[in-house]
Length: 138
Image 1 (cartoon, rainbow, N blue to C red):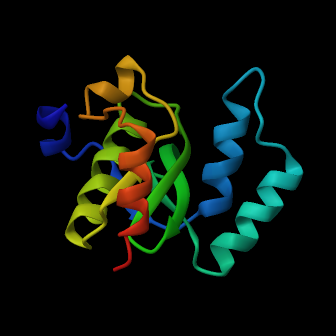
Image 2 (tube, rainbow, N blue to C red):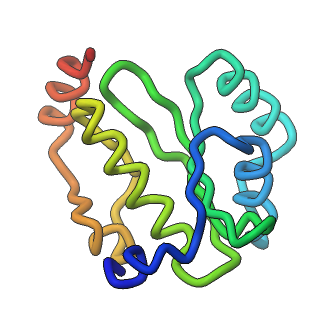
């Protein structure tokens, strides 16, 4: 993936088109929990500065993205999508880099799968999660 990132196949932006990211996360799946009410609520959270997105652009095409909620030093990833090769993975790498530079202590991916393990995601015990969450103010 690093070779692909170094080629800069996509223009990366932050919070440029939050609503399109969340709608695409819903649209690329056969069934999803992301309905119009969720989109409305998360868009309101975005307007308040609590929800954020990372977009990967192939020209004018939104090729991929990821969105989630930021509270203190914790980011809660909600969903991601891709319509071009590696676009969501690259958006995720940029998100993690930004969170790290800004001193975030926790990135909650909600679950662990092989796709996320390749990025270093690991499951931690509930007590440790709560301890980290308690100490995430920036």
